[in-house]
Image (cartoon, rainbow, N blue to C red; front, top):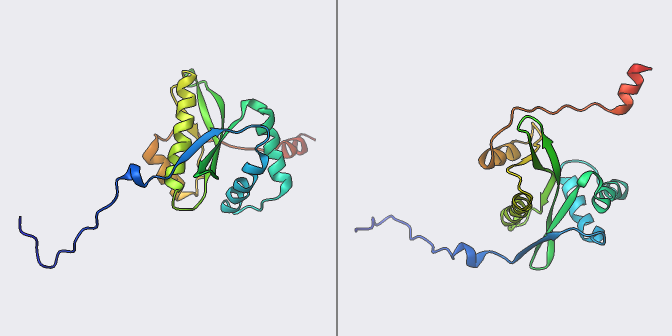
Length: 175
């Protein structure tokens, strides 16, 4: 085969598996608050919200007590916390099945983000399979174009549209 004179030499890339960092995902335990909290603060900041101890403690109470069957996992890259996922069982009455619903997922903005996301999702898939569930679901903000694109590559869009109403506003309207 003849190589054109103006062709640029290709750089050899290392095998993906060899280049991949060591990532460990494990279940969150009741003593993991100070491991999880900096990740939560980064996540909230990335969403454009202000993070504070009250917000973090409010979420952590649900994680630690497993309120509503909420579970969490933390991903470590080379021993350092780099991401987390919170999920719970959810009844899908349309499909007459139980699915695992991802409530929140975050991985830092470093070069290992994709690998951390893959490992966190893999851990949720493993949990779903172990329980005999056949699906995982999650919400994406309608204005999060990157999240919508990533989600479209991974799964199919459901027909559900979720709405929210505050309890306070409902009580005021009835009063």
